[in-house]
Image (cartoon, rainbow over all chains, first blue to last red; front, side):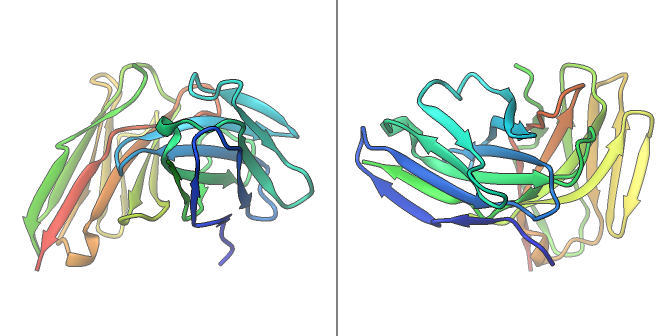
Amino acid sequence: EPEVTQTPSHQVTQMGQEVILRCVPISNHLYFYWYRQILGQKVEFLVSFYNNEISEKSEIFDDQFSVERPDGSNFTLKIRSTKLEDSAMYFCASSEQALLGEKLFFGSGTQLSVL
Amino acid sequence: SQQGEEDPQALSIQEGENATMNCSYKTSINNLQWYRQNSGRGLVHLILIRSNEREKHSGRLRVTLDTSKKSSSLLITASRAADTASYFCARTSGTYKYIFGTGTRLKVLA
């Protein structure tokens, strides 16, 4: 069964450093998302991406964050200058069609630890 | 806050019992979905109910939706130890942003 893959599974970085989290969505999916979850608690929306541009973003997704689909398969989240509070599990998700209510397929996440 | 809220936050039951989790939200919705998360893993879609539906079944899962009360419930019948996980509701309301609730941590004791 096709799945969303995320790399790396764990990322440790120093505060102020840049990190890039990588995702390979399911190949025929059109909508891509990043979510994050702090300490196994609530799942927070960061950004949605469609047709090579951001569809929506949350207030968390400030100028330190950016997303890119550099080729036909990868979808990346970049945090330019990490802060301690960016420590979280980051999930990539994708959906097949640009229809409201399409179910999301999630990757297994990247645990980001900012020291 | 637009976020949904699950209730209870944590639930512990014996194997074979039914588990009921509730989700409340504040604004109108197009549909509501339930997801499951095993510890440290990604979320897995369980079931979707549209705003014009009142009840839906899938195997041992039963979901209800009451748009007048802005609430939904997820019932897992005849629970198993393997059902131990966190359960989240997610809703969309006219955008492609899925808003997740805070989750219910279910523990099924063998």
